[in-house]
Amino acid sequence: MGDWVADPRKLSGGITSLSDRIHAMGLEFGLWFEPEMVSIDSDLHRAHPEWMVGPPERALTPQRNQYVLDMTRPDVVDHLAGAMSRIISDARIDYIKWDMNRNIT
Image 1 (cartoon, one colour):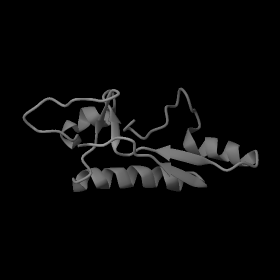
Image 2 (cartoon, rainbow, N blue to C red; image 1 turned 120 degrees about the vertical axis):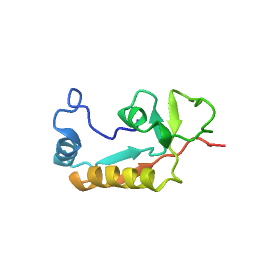
Image 3 (tube, helix red, strand yellow; image 1 turned 180 degrees about the vertical axis):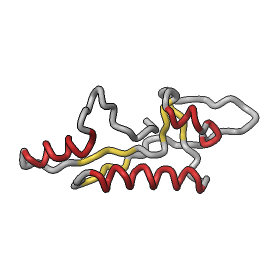
Image 4 (tube, one colour; image 1 turned 30 degrees about the vertical axis):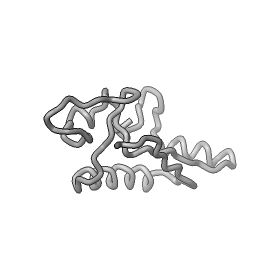
């Protein structure tokens, strides 16, 4: 979670190709997003550890090997909006499931 890029080893044609194949079967295509969560082993976490929620003077405490993105930061919101917009505009998506399953307090 957090990188928002299809792994070409697992999905060679990307999200657009998958969406096209699903639609060719007469089905609708949906995507699941959980934008507030970031895996510890993600490029996003490595590039921007300051974007994670937590007190600056203490080490972050992951839950389920994930951190929570600080959506009070405009740079985080801009990043998420851009990443999600690219995915949504590149493929024909019929519905989105927006997940949120963790309190941050």
